[in-house]
Amino acid sequence: MTKNELRKLLKTELSAVSAEKKLSASKKACGLLFEFVLKNNFDIVLSYIDLKNEISPQEINCALMMKNKIVAVPKVVPKTQRMNFYILDNSIKILKQLETGAFGISEPIEKKQNLFNADNFVQKKICVVVPGVAFGSKGQRLGHGMGFYDIYLSSLKKKCAQNNCELFLAGLCFDFQIKENIPVDENDIFMDSVFSDRKCYFFESAE
Image 1 (cartoon, rainbow, N blue to C red):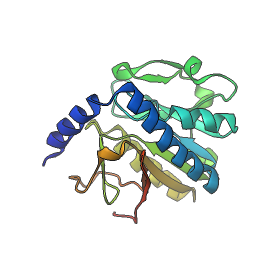
Image 2: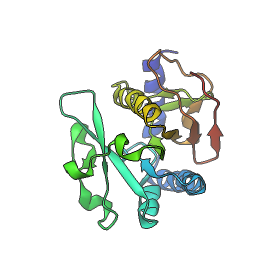
Image 3: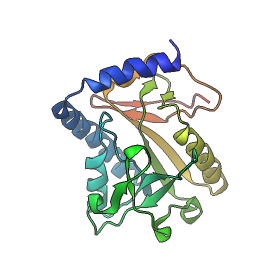
């Protein structure tokens, strides 16, 4: 099965998920991830704002901010395949810090002072919560095909290596999005783990 065929199949399955099931599954997956993040004491979590049919990280975003943890979410650079992450203000509700951005997705209101810069986190622990259309049994990830995460994560991995940061990539999804085989290209980034509404999956590096 090609990437586009698999995307089409998964998007059909995702479109059938009810709002109630999404809410329930999101709480379960976020609970598992929240426990992991606290146990491993990450210095910052780069999360995301979900699309309609994606599992939602809202609960873990809010819970981490209530714990006064540093949380950042992405914003697309217009007319490019690049995105940046902006650190949220823990004293302000998340929705008040968002605006409608690229592709109709909610994004953080751009403030230069809140721009995440890995150079400010030398020797720190960084967890990236990564959405996807599907994830493989070895940590493979199938995105929407636009390359934003592959480009960003590739750059971040290099920067973290230079700064001696510990980088952990955690996929977040419904359990049915985890497939045995996912077609990959040489530029695809593998996850260290995937957290679903059923369990946590941890992988040895497949790169």
